Length: 474
Image (cartoon, rainbow, N blue to C red):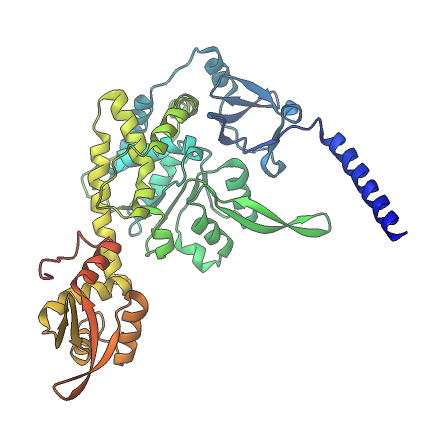
């Protein structure tokens, strides 16, 4: 009897499953896109608006009305319509008709020239770096990582001016001033906003932990942040994309986490006698900026796919002096520079190369100054050649722990050390340098075990080859 009941239940379940499958038969796979800017099926897409009707245009010269999304299997990310649609309808139509084509180099040159009217940098190579960065914001979705720009300088050095000039140029750029956390998350998630934050120190003072989380994660294309959003009378966890281009300016140092995502632009007060134009958007400048933005959208539609192919192909030769994370940071600009060089016979890639290597050296020096791991390696390299090993076993040297501790204690960086045990714990935990007990000439001794290869590997692992001299380590 029970067996018959079980068979009946199974038959009912099978029938129910078949009914569900019949309902699902006509469904199609849904493509979820971010309509402000996205890249799918080898095509760049943007939104534009005409007579309050929203359209999507793609690199294949096709236009889709938002109203037809459901029939075409397209779904908006989080169901939100973008608020910022700077692509003009007439430009999209001209692109579809093949009337309007744009040179990437010409866009680069216009941005570069425009910035030089209003900004002074001590290093002129910063202009092309920022121009390339602005161009890349129009198709940042094709990259795995997009570098942040950190404008670092004293008050009155022109950081705010740089941001003023960048805002009308970069993709959906917004100065995050007095924005709530919720609005900032939506700007990034829905509008793919290029986020610019002046006086960065205020974020920490105002305890804007949510925005700091957004910054820490939003360097990676796959990054999302879960927030509880009100839905009716309750709250529901919602996944927001935190990935978008970001620029921030400040006086103080930033965390190591953020630093690993940044191209640092150091700025200095403008010398007396050097004049730049007052930044003011009149009718002529407004028209120039709108036309240039349209050109940048066209660049995205024309060039996103071949630039992505270059970026994904691993044919770009990044300097060996850069760490893996630094390569992630710079690869976008190398891709754009190489593309423009091939198109216009310029030499941008070499400029980027030299600047990136110099930046890497500066970062390594800064790490030594403020990071214990880097300091430990630097001091070890300095003091080991001055010590006589108490024992040698193959390539491993054994050094008297008291002498090593006293050497560390005698440096400015580690004069605060209170006990040898603390140094031993640091060396072991960070670098697997052990401290062993042994009897040498009838005397019990504790010794640090260090091989020359180990020191060289540490220098290489922490990307300190350019700032630490290994000549004394045989």
